[in-house]
Image (cartoon, rainbow, N blue to C red):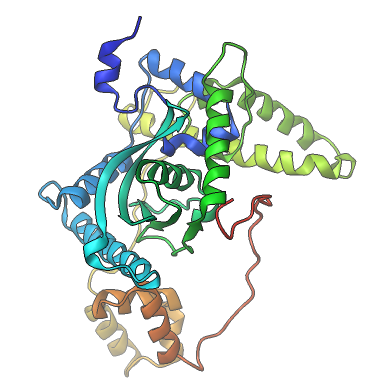
Length: 383
């Protein structure tokens, strides 16, 4: 018997959505575990998620009355980036304003035959003829997968292509607090491959009654079932075992899996620590055996003008460049942010301006690249 109330209140119809697609593809077993967690009444929404919801709503409706001043400025920056990406897309494909249909916060569906299997609620989409543009808004600072490897955007591209019979879809991320990443273009072949993988992911995760595989990884960070997941507990045990072993006895082919497990356990560890700290803030005796140390006062300067004048008087003269460098560190990125805010330049334009302004005095020092998993999927067209 169908639960009519659930269908009326859940716009996803109890089916996977684009926002959780990366986890569903990577760990089919997580879907049923999360459903069980929701059924037991467990859910979570952080203050950052609540702020993101407000910002999305304001960006959709244009009503910023619920936002504070920094959030209003953030929405303005989001709109600026959206307009730039839209104009670049229109210019590249010679699209007129009259031909463009723009939608915000609109849900589209992915089907297997006539059966819906997943949906994508698109923050911003535009269509013109057989072309489409999908923009995913990220109001936070957390680093997310680039468009070419982003399953949320892949699902969005497939959904909008299916709904409006598109052959080519461009996807991009709008994230003012992060470095911009290249957009990703999907052609008919790559859209077809992504749709097949999403439908296969649905069948592996949702259908049937057999036990589904669990694969711990960095996708566990926001899984509702992460605290009771047997696979994560097993990963912790394996890490302890490997930690006690001689590193030179571990097979090379095992090290990537070990690295992925360490990343997922590390994220979970940070989350657990944060939750315990929050509990101790509310009740100092909430966790027997743990306590928060007394707060300390951190010094900061509230009036830079008076501070510089006081230091100048102390030194009996103006600060030399060496003196200035001793007490204040200014990175090139800090100058770029200043140019962006004071001159209303976009990120790339601010970078170009600062490179010209400081030409000859910018030093480049080596920085080791971080370790990432090698992706076997081509990135040029999203598959």
